[in-house]
Length: 322
Ligand SMILES: [Cu+2]
Image 1 (cartoon, rainbow, N blue to C red):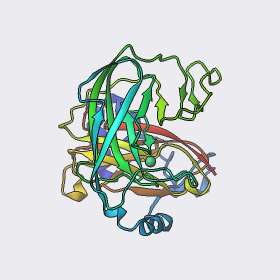
Image 2 (cartoon, helix red, strand yellow):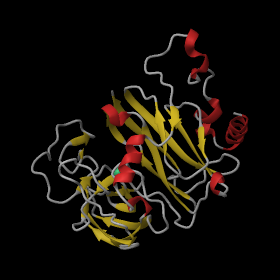
Image 3 (cartoon, protein in one colour):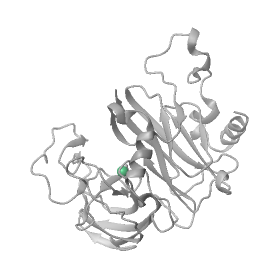
């Protein structure tokens, strides 16, 4: 906490906005060590970092050499700095590198498999399984956008080798309608600005893709340190809800435990800030049911968020159903 308080002071001097975070939480609100004599507020949870779950370790063993693969991606489309007409953007990728049997594909029986994480701007990633056909970004709003992609395992842990991550910036002219509901590739409404029932819940499109809510690119410099939030996201149910993995991609930034200058700071539900010193996933156990939000930030030695178009501080909401 000593480091935290120092960084909080530093932040207080420079960035008033971040005051709700770090060491400035009201005392006792999220420190559960002395909570036994107090009434526990509904939804209070004690999260702890646990080792890689045996279930995941077993999956790794069953995959042969795949976890030692060094998959690389190339974004064929959209081309770097391309200007595209219309709200539908086709993403085409080329997978290469030392694959050792790694192949994105959704098993129809289990609905699981290797896949690519596709991220438009700084929205939650979408899974892309069948690279033989393009992934459609639908209803993309007019303006500048970024696309980030990297290969992932069936349990959503990303490959972290050089060349796995790719990013392009592109511009859309005559883009999508920001008032349209947001739907998944099966036409299910996940968010609607007008709260109307899904108008597009008709036939399932043949191609993978997603209708996107309005977003724009951050002013991202591909040569600067960049944290890409990957997991957790969406809904977690039953045995998938405990533990829950935090995973991310780092570009141009080595963490202190890996011999570099940076750390990744995370917090759950505005709780105390925790630090990750190594670039690897962690598993958190002890979630309660309901909505939670997870904040992930790339910070320098002084505990300041490294600025890069706003992408280095990301908060996502997840829903846990017990
Ligand atoms: Cu995934």
